[in-house]
Image 1 (cartoon, rainbow, N blue to C red):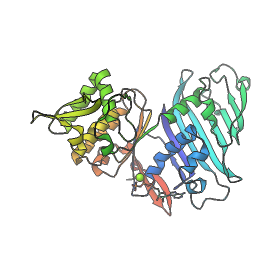
Image 2: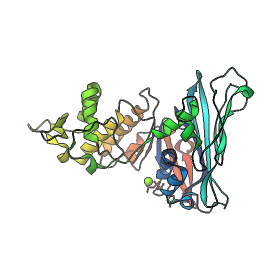
Image 3: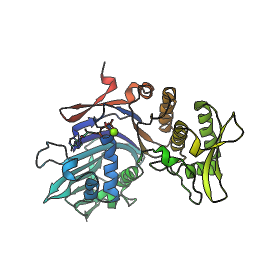
Image 4: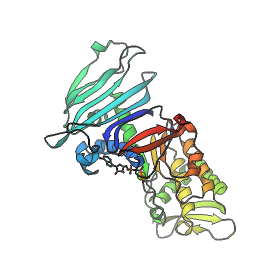
Length: 371
Ligand SMILES: Nc1ncnc2c1ncn2[C@@H]1O[C@H](COP(=O)(O)OP(=O)(O)OP(=O)(O)O)[C@@H](O)[C@H]1O
Ligand SMILES: [Mg+2]
């Protein structure tokens, strides 16, 4: 599954922007305050809407008035439109999801929610889910492609006025596109790595498959890869050896008092260094490799400014690792923001989007469109 297109209206600094032909590996640049974090927060916002409800997702961001673009008309709605590709009934289809959020009687309301795609090569896209103000329908036999449109079964439903219909319907297998989109958003991962949280021994009793947002479970995830996917662990160590001078061996070690730590062997010394005492960049590079060599990659990964603490010459390798993540055959997509010229230099022209603020609003441009 792959996001190809995003249109945002009245979402914070995005008054009305469109991103087309989004590549699998997407690098976002722009001066401070141009809207990079806001762009990534679209996925965070949708995830909060799905986990809780729209009201709570807005509240976490200061409420409707903080989220809707300053200066928007009184009756304006926040609108998010996402087009993605997925396999449905043996064909690769382009699915459109649109959600509009307005305010009625001082409360946020989903004024429109649509999921549509074309059933055949010709004709206009069919609405498989169509809701407004908590009422609407979903098609229950969407995969019956032999039936004409008028023979599809509509299931009328009501949901809370500030609840996304895909939240409930997405749990049912029979609503194929809705559940796939819901899964994509729920498994969206943003990395907000904190070196000091990643360091230090952890309670060895735990077992974690995925690196957390902050990286504070690095030891547990590294042990899981070490014990259950040794070939992958060896690849990570191999990448570390090539990129961080002095590293010859890395091992998760359980201490007698039930703690777990990582030992980093420097070829020049007999005794290894534990994770608490290796350099910031060593921990960071290792954590990124653990994130990027995840045996079950996230379908959608966002990372802000991965370059910090890393030597300029390492940026190109790091960028390569991000791109490789999208090429593992697991259908993953990566959005990275950066302020590093070296990291940016490692990107292809087609991969770079560039945000510019004009009169308070963000415009999204493409590097390839600029001579
Ligand atoms: N409701 C709104 N209407 C218009 N602009 C808004 C609204 N809410 C926030 N902004 C502005 O949007 C901008 C986007 O900031 P954002 O954090 O996305 O920038 P950034 O590109 O990540 O910057 P940095 O490189 O410093 O991290 C900020 O300048 C903020 O003031
Ligand atoms: Mg930012």
